Image (tube, rainbow, N blue to C red; front, side):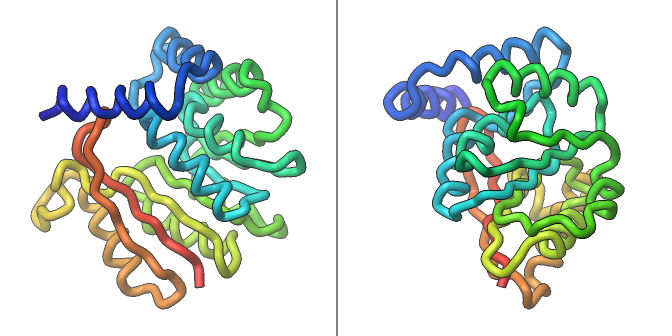
Length: 218
């Protein structure tokens, strides 16, 4: 089924997204610089951009920059006076992302902060609240990242968490995979938190069988 899923994603991209030199250059540069090919798909990137626009986001927080592919999609959703803060552990990834963002004409809108995201989030006090948060980093810390997103957001803030189905691995209560353990902890936290309204959607496509959480701060 994987080839069929890829073909459908290609069809969607061809009919609805078209060619995009900045995004194509970003993926090529990421590969040349040795970054893993784990970016969101083009269709998923467009979905993120549309959701940010629907939310009327002026301030976006991204946890997990990689080479800036999803960052570009999100930054494009911002109004002229909008801003995006993105957190990246690896300095090399951040340098690649900065180049990609500059090439896309979005460097002025994006603040890349380097270091463990938990530390960066803890240091973010006194900043204006974020309207939209996209989480796509180490899965072991997802619950902590959502807690931080609530603290740094406001009533109505949209939170998206990627890779929460893991080809059905989320069902395995006995898994020793830290990513699955972290994802299950995320679901437990979401279900028990009265300050959030949340659901999760399964997806198939170029990135295989996975899914994302969509939540709203109450």
